[in-house]
Structure formats: structure tokens, C-alpha cells
Length: 227
Image (tube, rainbow, N blue to C red; front, side):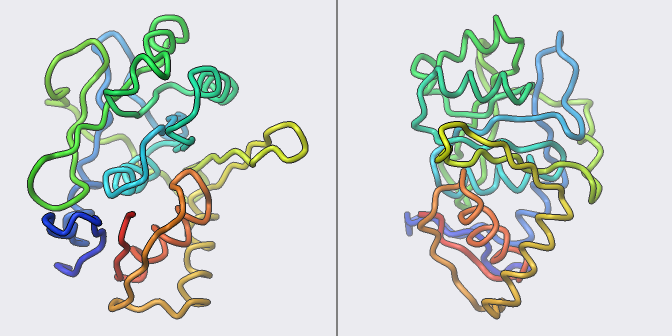
């Protein structure tokens, strides 16, 4: 529908509508260098993005085709590399200003990971973005390529790390089925409706921010403000 789905705190930007999300996700393709094999189902993709509507749309898009592994965008280069190597990630999605801070050249050159930048659009609905590759200028082309096969219910769509209170991080995988069931439980528990507006105050590398405050409003035809 043309109802709002994602809002930005920047009120100069119109909201992203549900129909915009459907169109964007349906045509979503992660770019890759010509020398690399395109990503497919269950390929793990690290996400190091600041919380906001672009991050929200990227999560919805990546989880539809690949295994999304979000981390705190303020992590160190060592923390990101440890997590990425442990998860055998094939790509890292982040922002261009994080190249040096997160040691992205090392991940690409030594660990053979694709490094993909989210490039927010400066006009139009909040959350829409283009993508580019480390080492290449301009928006990455996906001409001639079709989206990857969408995930089925048993594919892993999300991998999260626990906080490591026992001294060691634990990896928690979620299949698409797990995510849908958990999301619907929140929708019914909170009695979410199309007119409901959720203000997300949670980070989008936490199950609460992702399932409760992003997926649940979108699944129930409502909307969420991505603070």
C-alpha cells in the first residue's frame, strides 16, 4: 500500500511507503566485483551500519536473500574481523567513512570479503540507498543480473551475537521461519494495527530492535520511526 512504513527523524524527508519497500526488496542485488562469485542463499553478510532508515531497509533486503549478521557500527577493526572470520562472512556492508577505522582493505585483500558501501540518497523517501564497492568509483552496476533466489523458511536469515556475559560470545542463528513466527507473536501480543506507529530506540544489531521494532511494525502494515 501507499501507507508509511519507515520514518526518519528528519521531517524534511517523506516516509518510505510499504509499496516502496516491496519494490526495493524485490529488485535487491548486492553488487560484487567481476572476479568474485555473486552471493546466494545462506551466504553470510556482516552489517556495520548506524541505526537509521537506510539500515532498516538494508536489513529487510539482505535477510530476504542472504544471512544477515549485524554488528555495532562503533566496533573496532579487530572486533569486526574476529566476528567476520568466525562466521565465514563473504561480504561486509558498511559506510564509506568507516574504511580506515574498520580496516576494510584488510578484510577485502587478506580475508577475501566483498566490501559494499551503502550510499544514502539525498532526496526522496527516507531510507532508499544505492551501493558501491571498495576500490571502485561511483554506484556499482548490477546490470544484466537478477536477484538471488529468495530464502525459503529453513534458510538462515539472521545471525546475532550474544553480549558475551559468560566471557565468550555465542552465535544465535535465526531461520526465516523463526523470524516470521517471532514477529507475528509480537504483532499479536502488542495488538499492532496499520495505524500503529512504533518509535525504535533500540540498536539494529539487537533482536529487540530488529524483530520487535522493525519487522513487527512492517509485518502489521504499520510504521516505525528509525531514530
